[in-house]
Image (tube, rainbow, N blue to C red; front, side, top):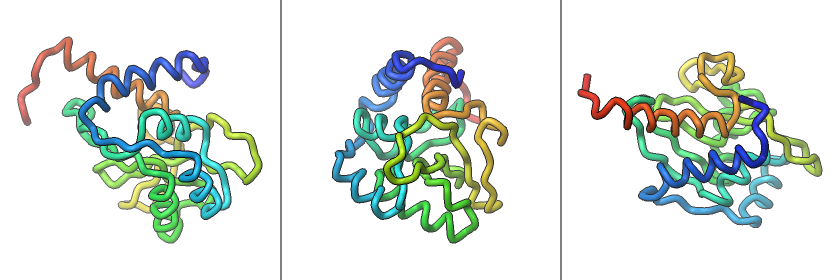
Length: 169
C-alpha cells in the first residue's frame, strides 16, 4: 500500500475526517506553527503529517473498540516537546513523534534536514515501555505510513458496521 497516489492519499484523509473527526475537537496548525517547531527541532516534518494537521487538525482521535486503542495526533510544538523526552529516553534523534497511542507507543517519522524537500517516508514506532524504536511495518503494526494508519481506522469502521455491535470482553 505504500505506493499510493496523491489522489488516493487525499481520499483516505477525507474519508478519515468524515468518519472520525466530525465530533472531535481538533485544531488545525498553520504555517507559523510549523516554522517555529521546525526551527526548534532543526528539521522538517514530512508532507503526510503537515497535510494532516493543516487540513484535518491535531488532538485526540476517538477510540475504536476493534482497534483497541485511541490516538492523539500531536501539534507541531507538542511533537517537538514529546520527541525531546523520547530522545532523552533513547529514541533515535533522527525520529520525531507525530502521534501518541494510549498504549504508550509513539508514531514517528524520520525528520528531514532543514531546506530538504518534505518526503512521504514510512512510519516508525517508539515504545516508552521498552525504550525501543522500530519501523512500524516490521514492529507488528499493519501499516507503515500515516495514510495506511488512517486507512486501517477506516477499515475497522467498515468491519464494525458489517458485524454489528460487539460485546465487551
